Image (cartoon, rainbow, N blue to C red; front, side, top):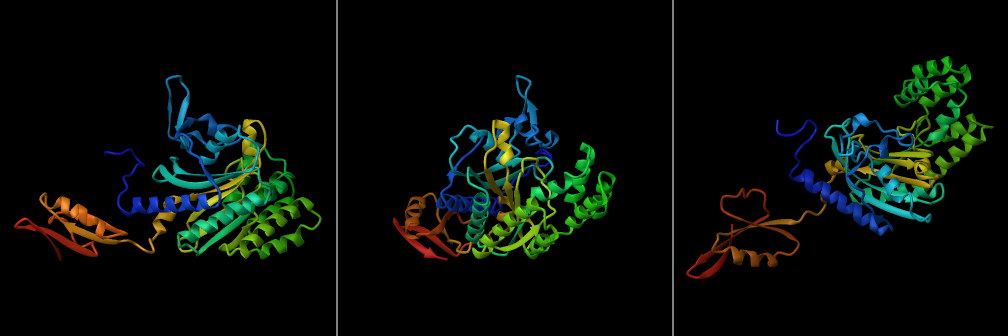
Length: 374
């Protein structure tokens, strides 16, 4: 009644855990050489709805400004940062960000991300640094039971090139592939090309699991140098991650991109306890073509809200309550310094005292202060 649909108030651990996760992210990013960047929360809609990004306007929070142009609340960090950095000097750059994004096709409308953008680094270096950064951050949060899924845009796209697809059929096929609808993938491909390509695409739906699937497809695609090169990239990345101790590695050779700017490797992190996606990203060189030329670009974004739900402080501070009155408040305030590395809460007798490790009461008797432990 008092909030728009999708908006929500947050309080207590939901807020404190989120800020704890974001502070740990900032420390890890700084320690790995990232500079911080922030973009405006209000942008022009065309930043996100152009052919390079192709986000859907109906999913954005939007309005007309005084000049009649459509403005939106930021629905995507990567696109905003590409706009901001498009005129920067072409040298290796590592940027980190954190803040809210807004999208109406997700419960809550406002959700929180922390992420990294890596520019002008060669292939595999950007992808590997993104995923090693993810490993460092999740380790700092105490999260070790997660899996990393690797895919690549060019596998599906190379096979689809053999089909004569109109725009609507191309989108139907992409969605069927995304949803792992094997029969539908086969039928659409058969209706628009040939039996061999249909069989290959249908098989790709099931090309999901451990890294041994790469060995199977190296044998299957002998003679296809373009596809073998992609498999080699995935394999090398998996090797780097395995040797660095970064989670459990999965591959999805049939994964398709959900935004057109992805142009190479794609990856996601799954929490094994809940199955929730805690980060996603990849390579998106073509995104910068919107601003006058391709740029080597890779990165990922963490779902801060998912991580905050899982976060538990391994060494919470001891909570001390000092009961005071207007006459003893100044003395109680000075008493704080006696309790280093503790949460010290000055309260009255009416407070709920069941959530403290230690409770003290300051009394004033005949002009003298006395501290009693309750």
